Length: 130
Image (cartoon, rainbow, N blue to C red):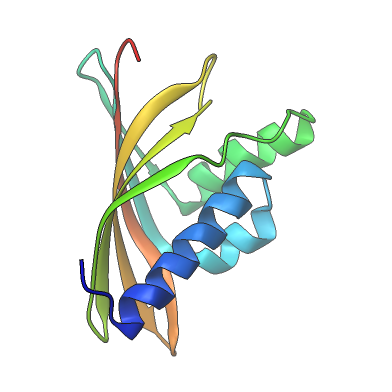
């Protein structure tokens, strides 16, 4: 994969997103997530849930309020595509979203507005039995 400046900037933001999410830094998530964020989560049973920015940030706020331990920061970048306005990241992670740690694959769409990248959409595929 050849890397351009936009792809480098996007990878840096995704690393910041991972750090913010795993440490429940809701203030950083406020900056990283676009106001029109949509998160689609597809689980192994075939169910799909949808969350907006407030709902998804609330998940991390609850973890912080409950003094839960930081999440796993493991990540494997599969692909980053970016131009001067839009970007897409395909990445695998190991996270404890619910009761136990699971492997997930995320398809993340970003937009650049006011000279800053923000996450517009996350599509999360939760793998079963891994």
